[in-house]
Image (cartoon, rainbow, N blue to C red; front, side, top):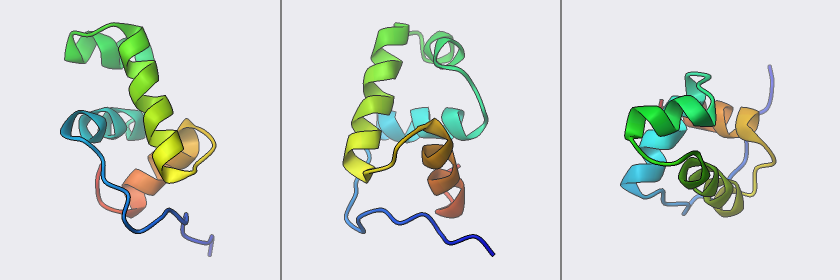
Length: 73
């Protein structure tokens, strides 16, 4: 079995980041997420970047897996 993704236990996502990570976990592109939330694509890129920084993960795939493993998505 693959090892669970390790993230600092005290990572807290903002309500908006939580919504964004749920869309990421569904495989949606930044453009689609931006349209869904009625914001710019750049805003979504910032949220994804912030979440990668907070979690220490390297990419959207790891972010999606972490969200799914932790029942956020």
